[in-house]
Image (cartoon, rainbow, N blue to C red):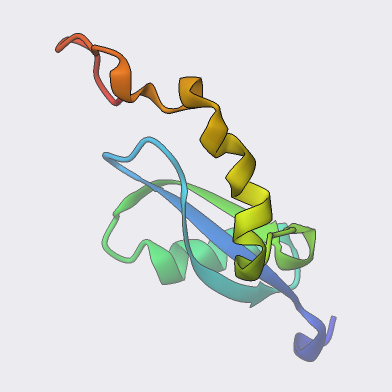
Length: 95
């Protein structure tokens, strides 16, 4: 495969003390194995990760920032989705 035709991959990394994967950048690679190896070499140079996800950019669908109002406004009228009135016990972690 010609390097000019390699897929663009989005890289997500889970840090040692993190609970979820976070987007850390993008890279080009010929296949999934190469994408994982390149992501490891580029984004975990200081051993800061415990898990890597690579996803072809073409597989990601995102909303546009200018669609914010119609997309997120409906949830504002559902107060049960905003747990500001709940008491969370001290022994509950990661809330």
